[in-house]
Image 1 (cartoon, chains in turn blue, cyan, green, red):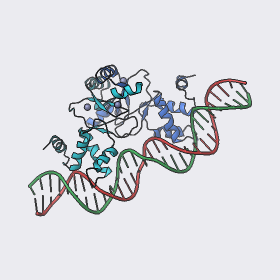
Image 2 (cartoon, chains in turn green, orange, brown, purple):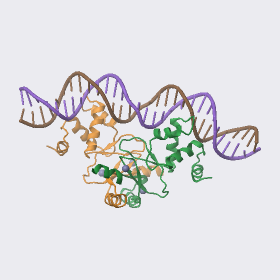
Image 3 (tube, protein in one colour):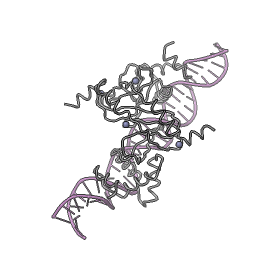
Image 4 (tube, protein in one colour):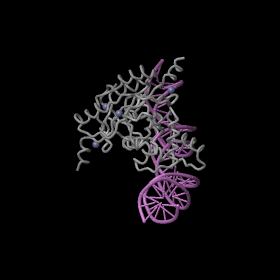
Length: 142
Length: 142
DNA sequence: TGTATAAATAGAAATGATTTCTATTTAATA
DNA sequence: TATTAAATAGAAATCATTTCTATTTATACA
Ligand SMILES: [Zn+2]
Ligand SMILES: [Zn+2]
Ligand SMILES: [Zn+2]
Ligand SMILES: [Zn+2]
């Protein structure tokens, strides 16, 4: 049983060929993809594959933190599978969609501030950097 | 000329009664509001007021950093006017919608990491903490 | 291995928040 | 006050995402 199957089991999701294929498709990418784009790639692998299935699975996988959701300025859904398992955040290129890891997380400091100053309870935090990757920022220089 | 008028001028937006009213409505709130909710409040002040006008203005004001957009898990639009002018981030309560300032920003460290490690160009960054405020976390204890 | 069962899926359809469009009005400027 | 570009109302469209239901499938276990 591979890692993905294990992860799926772990979150009480059945190990279906479609789920594994979605993960496989995302594994091959260094850029974030939209549900429709993933659907397009799925159609090459399955005779029958519905777009709602893609949406549903992406959401489930994202809830289980197997894949990550991108906060795009255009407010559409994009997903990315990060090879790095430990908690971290992302730099996303708004031009070519490349995703790169930011090895920095403010969670500790933030949790402390929320706890002590605000007396609140943290459920989740978002940290994302939007910009242009090395390649794209060079292009825009020209 | 009040502060808001000045800000509007500054970003080449005309000072219209509707723009000022939207800002006034947001000023009175300690919680984030949806465009439709703001529209509801606008209808009490204007006989004629279209929802697209509210959407358009909120987007413009947000682009000018006069108001801030909330990154809600439900992916709907919400806006908040923060009295604190300097750059900072927010803790939002997912239950009562209260917004509180987080006096912490990772921008410097992040910019450095992106510049040196990734050789990329930062356009914007998102930092937001979602949770339950003091009051709401007490309630959920019960 | 078969069988039972809940979960997953296909495909069609609906949804509704957000955006677009155009004629009319208005703020700003001189 | 006249000019003009920007802002607005109101109707309509958009379209990404979700919902629905009948059918299929993964899984547990006899
Ligand atoms: Zn790039
Ligand atoms: Zn983090
Ligand atoms: Zn609260
Ligand atoms: Zn603030």
